[in-house]
Length: 416
Image 1: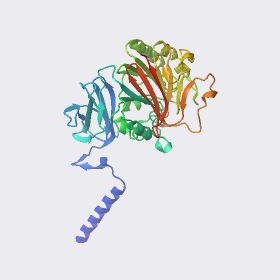
Image 2: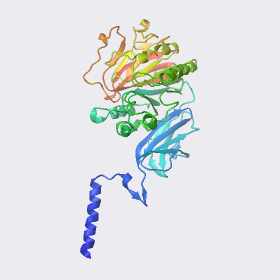
Image 3: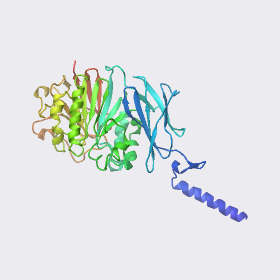
Image 4: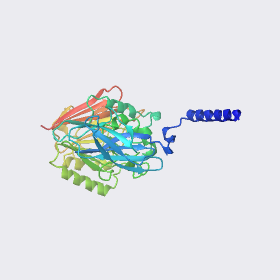
């Protein structure tokens, strides 16, 4: 009998050690006949407009979603949310409303009454009520390249997180998740490397050609909570208007409806904002290794006619700022001389490629002098992000390297 007990005990110990050596994850643990809730994706922020914001995260199991929040870490407010289950995870969305404009809030997330995340880095800032208040945002494209293939989204994320003043939000210029935009790789290639900034800086991506690799209605739209139809949408922040477009594979998605919507959106924005930004994935004219995209160039007349100030794109894994263009894509000569300071650009716009947030084109160097009519104002071939600061009618752009935080390019535009 004693030998049998010893044998059973040895078997039990060996079994426990075997499972331990295999790396049993928390989601495999069962407490009181229930699978314990595990946080699979750190919270990330969406739709921080006016007095509301949405907090999203992902777990292995869970029936409820809750966020506690407050201007101090006592977290005196509570909001419940919704869940969406798929084959191997639960997606949580909680929208907080009635927030005090211009205030900083701390938050904590819960599922099934279990605290999943809370701390100094879990906070958000609400858009100020004063339209003249200073704010900033970062922009970068071509982000979610796997680290094992040379990608560096975690390095760019670290540099953004190291800024003395955190941006109020970020925009993504397409190719958000390689290789085909599949949700299967979203956490490993994007959300994990960028979690340090996604948890406290709202992020608004546009679709790129890689994000179109597998049906975006089953992938991209599942990962994000964006306005309109998520393919093309707009939002306001402070005294500025932002429009995201879907350039798909170089041809505009749902072209007739999207262009009509775009022009109507621009018409409605006239006279209401000091600044208008348009962003998407593909370049128009360029001196990079990418071809000129006719679909984007066809939008130039709308940019110029409806007072678009800055157009931002990715696609080329490098940085390129062009001289101000007119409606025909011609350099406006009077702005060529001074590339560091601009007045308000009448009937024209500045186009910027900022497409090396997580991937750099190898075995290639910019050669703008060989591009014909010298359309390039500045180039930088290294991992980077663009930081744009708005203070009333003054705009400042700074391009910052992912490694070292060096200033690669800058200019100001003053409409006063």
